Length: 364
Image 1 (tube, one colour):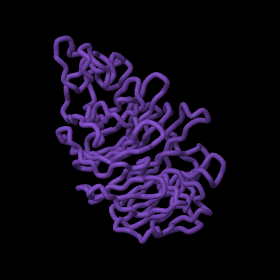
Image 2: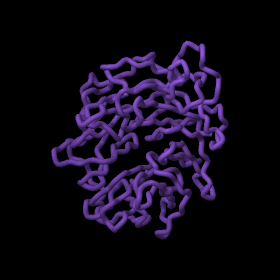
Image 3: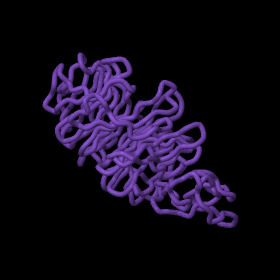
Image 4: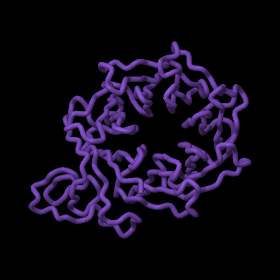
């Protein structure tokens, strides 16, 4: 991660790849991919020596947006112009920062929106603000900065928030208080509860569209449920879209709800989907997967980051199905890609191996 304590170069230009290794591998002159070396021994070879296993062409190198991060990235989001991320120090302290950088680059000087944050994660944005979770609170900061003093939208020593999402007007949260929301301008530390703990006793991740909140739940029936509730509220009458399957991450597009579900070992699993209006409790499996670390969707495709014991990959499947034959967009080598985020043309992600990286490739 980039912090006030380290000055790192951010480059958002496609650079020649050398050394034939995974992104971040040192070439023979010792420079990491995307960093200038002396040029004496780096060959203009493809980024990956395992290109034969990829659907993408061997010269489809990802753009390294941020290289040699010294802290551990925990979440990433992108809007029309800018990347935003949370990061933590390695070790038990959990101290971290919230940073941003234009997609066009920032000359090694990212904007530090907040520093010395305790375990920051789950970042999201709207047109004006950036929001993230720390233990016991949801914090916000203007995209242009807040003087290093973020505002607590909701806080409390007994509050436990796992996931947040913004629709531009409100910030929705899954917590030990159920499913609720707080206005982006504040709610006097009293979020409105849409689904009470009686129907959402252990909500995991959530997603929102124009009318509805969707979430995965681990406390209603064994092996979990996928549920929805109108933004106007549902009290004790949330809609159950699917049961079982141990659902985890969740995203939505114009027509469907998508989530990942691991098998019992957690090393493999599947991506599932159900219509927003319901699927009679019988969701459709889009594809089998390795262990999934991040999930994203637009109206055309569903994307996920996954890894096994050998390598990680960025994968997509048509939102309407791909006959259990998803496209491996790119193999990222021996890393753990995480937190995919989409703009109109590209997918962005980070890997959590140290030194970590933030990278991007076109969606198609």
